[in-house]
Image (spheres, rainbow, N blue to C red):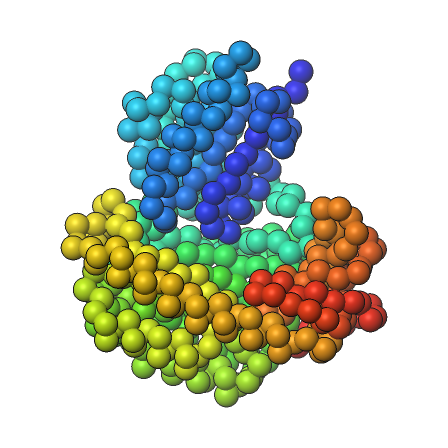
Length: 442
């Protein structure tokens, strides 16, 4: 009888990539994927530790699994990802229902870990940092994601040590995968239907392998004729090097949306955060890119109510948002993460933080709405990813990563089609297809 695995993923795009690669691995030992809890012989939760209460979400989820399998044979329960890395042995002690704990740099060991557990029934924790072995192993297993828009991790870990962030502790030091290994995976994805590749990293623009940089990867990947679009995320302002900025002059397939988290518009707060960049440097990058291509737009991340943030610091953030007019951004109230420098800092009064967040989001959402409204009546290129759930419409994304729903057909999937935008809201454009054109995208 075949074994079935249910994988639930929390958090970032890198976790999505990891979940896909975990499944590519466990297929080798006889597991099939299921979308139904109750069918699973193995339940795997791929966790994220960036936001508040991430650990408690894990235990809450395990509680749900317990109820579902109360009258059934217990599945093998695996906790993977960044919470697994941060909590490791503590998870096995606190919740006996958990069988295996595997950190994000130990996925190359997952098959052996499962087989050893099935044989010996001994709970195991694997949380060593070994990115080299991980990617060497995964490079031998084909990436079977098979999606029109496919993720491809090129870099992991972080050496920046921002005072609010757990990534250096859960993903380890910065590691850049071998250049050829990435290109081989990109070609395989292209050969199996990918039309867009999104290059991933905790500090994706810090990629550096034997002199090859992110700019080199972009230029080489776009040589693949099947690939129509290239993106990358998430970037650090300190690593927006001149060669990466200059690539926007010559690349034919790099999309004109730059996701560049700034976190705050105040130099004082950036220093408190240990961000290692200034607002002046950030604006310099913005101005250089806009000069190269005025159609380039920015998205960002903001932490509101960071310890020490005063009214003037908050006003500086508003001023930055009004200057750049970010078209899509994520904003959160600061929440201390265990083990970070900022864990024990004095918090700003919650009421003040909530008021500031609401003001910031009002401006950010207004920018999104205005950007989408400006496209009404215009014709844009849309990469079609799939059909809507009821199969009545097609779903795709614009060059700026905005969702587009229109009257496309199944045979449009994987193509770039031209869509006239009729209507919009903050998150989505709605339109009608006018022609199919699998042309290159500038």
